[in-house]
Image (cartoon, rainbow, N blue to C red):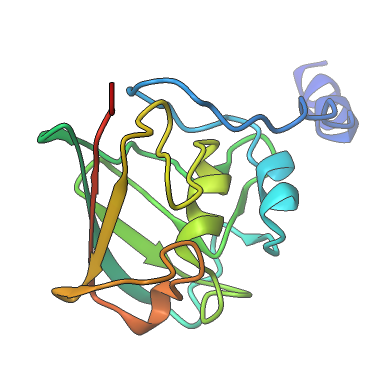
Length: 162
């Protein structure tokens, strides 16, 4: 009986994910559990969780009003479907993993969309007093379009304004 229940449970379709929404709030920003809607909104492909192709890592550091904002575990991971976005996190260390389809093209803007956080070059979440991005120590003029595979370290400083 237990075996039959387990087999039937594997055949049940996953519930449709809620629509993706970009948060315009202050941190903390948890990772979306149903990431697939966020992958679609970002325009990035999904890969299986075990896809380690094109693997590369970089560090992303965020500060809002001089306060550190940690990356959270499972950004870019769709747990119910066992899928990953080309840029994702495993923990809160600040390491972003680039793996699978699209890992060479994924941008910083797409990473924040996958995370579900507004990032438009002027605002980061609720912080709309200005955003400065440096990559490998150099200022970035187009932070949204910054291709993550081309850098090793990204620092984001945002101000609340007001």
